[in-house]
Structures are given as C-alpha cells and as structure tokens.
Amino acid sequence: MASKVDGANVLGPWGGSGGTAWSFANAQAITKIKINVGDIVDSITFQYMDGKTARWSPRYGGVGGKPTEIELGPAEFIISMKGYYGPYVGKTMIYSLTFVTTIHEYGPYGQKKGTQFFIPKGTGLISGFFGRSGDQLDAIGVYMKTPIESPVAVGPWGGSGGTAWSFENAWTITKIKISVGDVVDSITFQYMDGKTTRWSSRYGGAGGKPIEIDLGTNNNLKAIYGHYDNYYGKIVIMSLTFVTTTGTYGPYGPEKGTAFSLPVKAGKVVGFFGRAGQWLDALGFYLKPTSA
Image (cartoon, rainbow, N blue to C red; front, side, top):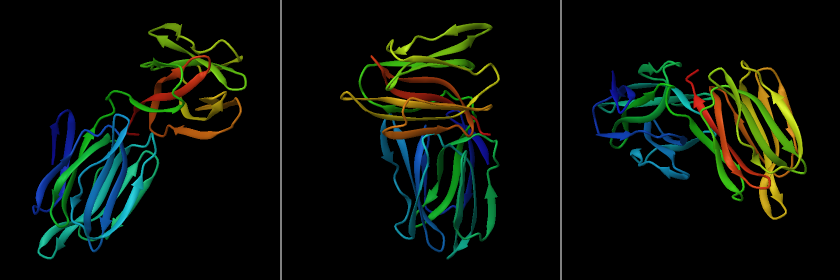
C-alpha cells in the first residue's frame, strides 16, 4: 500500500473499490477539513492555500450526512490519520475518520465499526489525500511527505507599509536584537554560518531602545506571540514575545491591538520575513516542519 508520486509517499487507499477515483495532492497548507457523516462518511472536502488565497477542493462523495468543519491553525500540520471501513449496503465504505495534527486530535467522525486502519505518527506530514467516492466516501489514502521539504511561510501579520524583507534558511539563530519604543522599531538576527557568527540586516528604523535576546546554540524557539495596531495611520507591529526551550522573553512593546501567535509544536523556526520602513510593519516566519 506504499509507493511514491511526485516525491511523496502514497499510503493506502483503505476502503472499497466503488465510485470513481479522486486525488487532492500537493497542498502546501491545508487550512480546513469539512467532513459529512451519517451512518458512514458521506463526503470530505479540503480548504487549502493557493499562495495567499484560500480555496476549496471539490467535494469527494455525496450530499448526505451532517457536516462538521475542522479548522487548522497557521502552523498546524496533519501528521496522522486513522479510521474504520467495512460493508455497507453491499459495498465497502469508510465508516469513520480521525485526524491527528501537531497540536490536536480531531475525531472520530463516524462509527468505529469494521476494519481499523491507521498511519502512525513519525511517518511524515500529510500533504494531500486520494481515494474513491460516489454517493459516499468509498476509500481514502494519503500523500505523505517527509520533513525534508522546503520551509513553510507562515504569516505575515501586520500592515502593508514599508518594503518587503526576508531572512531565511538560518538553521541556528543565536540572538535576536529588538528595538522598541511606542511600537517595535526594528528587529535583527544573529545566526551561525558554518562556524562563523553573523548578523542579519536591521529590519526597520533606527529608533527605540535595543534589547538583545541570547538564545545560544541549543535553544529553539517554541512560540512567538505579538500584537499589531494602527500607529500614526499605519498598521505596525506593537509587541513581540519569544518563548524558547528555556524561558519566555518579553513582551517587548505594548500588548495593544490585534493579537497573533505561532505555536511551534513540531518544527523549527528557520527564518523570518515581513515588511519594514521607519518601524517594523509586518512579521512572518519560515517554519521547517517535522513529523514529531
């Protein structure tokens, strides 16, 4: 039940041979799953990001069943799926599905009846699905990618002022320098280039009071929190907080406006990007996922 398609491992499908074949592949970021369930799983649909645009896949299955929508966070990845299939009105169908992410377990949706199947954690990240469907969901399998893929861009949060910047592919970030006044004025990163310590460019203006966070070489970022708000007619980053494996740094700046957060449950922050001018207008993250 395993092969490879376009660099992804193909696992499954589980279920029956009825209906027609379908495939939903190469989704970099799955943001929602809509599943309709009655006596069995009637249908499944996926929302995904196409650049910065959220799009829905076709519905795989029929129109029956009660709909349930699963919403995934901005850095939440599906790492496992389990379920049951068995005979239903002369056909083999999917009876239930459960999805496991880097943060939460969703389900089971449907009945635990028939033959169980599961994909163990640690196999990789589920980047798509395939199977067979007609009036119901006959069969389902997954496209599983190992965590050696390119980093995922998460965000940015904030405004559209200033100019775009990007600091990426830094596997070891050792220090973060943040300058703060009424807002976050700028941010700078120290990183390892082989055995050499280097500083990134300063992203933002020259104002504010500088604060330096020393991460060392074995201290990973586990979460980043912040706020953005209007400041003199511009939306800018107001505050930032960094949570590492050894402690919490911040908040730096006033916790005012709209809050955002990036919990890193299974992955590593390997860079940042955003927009900056006189201040830090926007901030996003490059996350290297792992299957944990």
